[in-house]
Image (cartoon, rainbow, N blue to C red; front, side, top):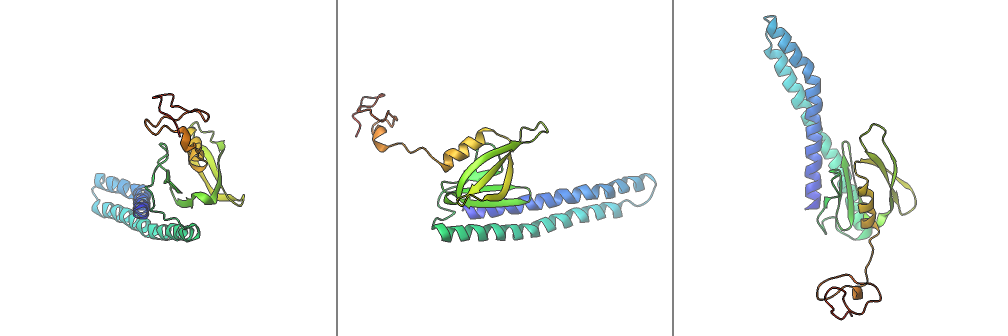
Length: 204
């Protein structure tokens, strides 16, 4: 299901961006149509040309999405074979409110503009904030480093300072010993506690 959702997202983004690019270019044709109409000339040709350009760019975006989907799926399949963990093992959900970073229990997915990448958790050694933009947007740069200490090519923009903390908690989770968790109410107790501070239940 994760693979299907990611492929659908890639198709949608590239197609919409193609349509947007076509609309921007077509504005001059729509402008010519308005001018031609005010001067008594036929405006239909310019309108049709603008619509044709928009549709054409949308189609090009859709075709480009197949190339991107193929590259991402190839990378995912390679890592699945390498680490023996399915990309569909757990649901992918949005990380924070970034709208571009997604994660499951074992995978991290980044998607923005012309780039889509997926990484298996064990291939990542560090996620760090390395700078910020100066345009007042509060967007920063985060870098992913692989287990060999090499900087991965992907550097992405974020708009939340707490996203770094969330991703690092995901990458390096704090493991709480089972004996500190109350079997009755689920309260997390101090390491040396013998009884639950919430309900008084004896801990294992």
